[in-house]
Length: 107
Image (tube, rainbow, N blue to C red; front, side):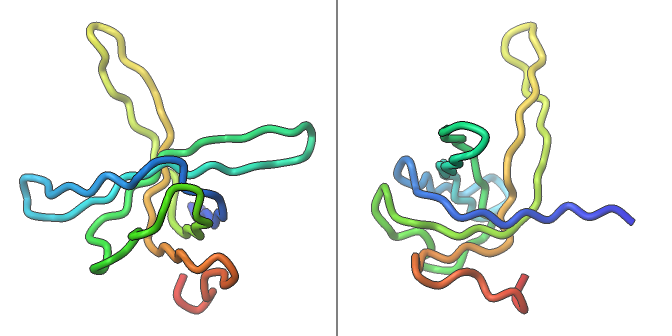
């Protein structure tokens, strides 16, 4: 059995981008910075997409702690004549309360 489940906690890097797509669905895109101390100090910045978020979702300032549960999606965008590859996190649940991680029963 395969499983594609990711739970991350990081900091909001830039203001969330709220959009309505052609189908009428709402999408919020944002960047999440994840710091790790091992094997060396580094910061990974991951793009996150959150489809049809509840009203007021991600009404927080840059630098705020955000918990995200979702799945990894690999896209193959074309830039000019070159086809690239990028990973994104598709969020199913987002929580902006820094001292309270996602409830596992809702994941």
